[in-house]
Length: 122
Image (cartoon, rainbow, N blue to C red; front, side, top):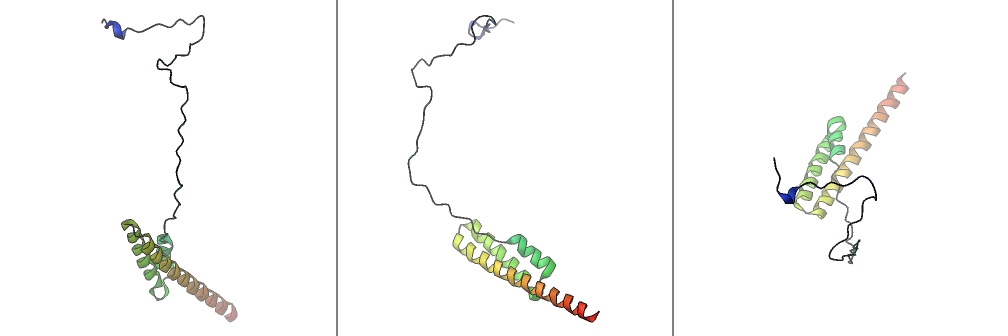
């Protein structure tokens, strides 16, 4: 199978000098540095929706259906974030966090009350 002359493989001798550096025919500098000048954009943190905490509150604790309210506001926060309303998402996320804190506090106080009552009855 004969190849056209432009595709003939070239053989590099293994003896003698090491590889020679090829020169750029246009004389371009070896390294080009690009500097972008501009104002840095402030980093705005994404609002948190606390969905995992809300689901744990719904499944494990849920006194007075506060875990359900926390899940509701978490989902609303996630929906607002997907639409692009970051301020609305932040407000709903804060509401979900408040309901989760109230749920956790009530459950902790309830378990503490049960533990103290159990210890006193023994």
